[in-house]
Length: 80
Image 1 (cartoon, rainbow, N blue to C red):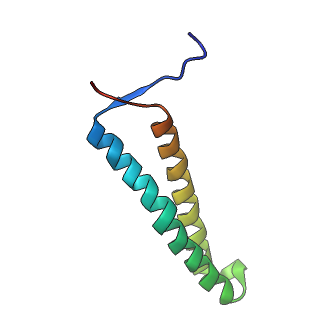
Image 2 (image 1 turned 90 degrees about the vertical axis):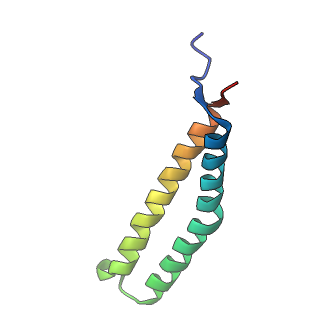
């Protein structure tokens, strides 16, 4: 059926690992990169601020991975 979502079949331990990773990204990594951005902004001119650029790239990586994990978990189905 076209409306059905393709399921990702995985072990329960793999599912838990994905859930732990997602929680860490949301609760720890996001906060750390937000703090780094705040410090980098305080250094002044953002156009030549390497710390700011690196923090923005890291923020993008974190947000992309969060999106990937949310999609994986939305489709997750454990093995019987």
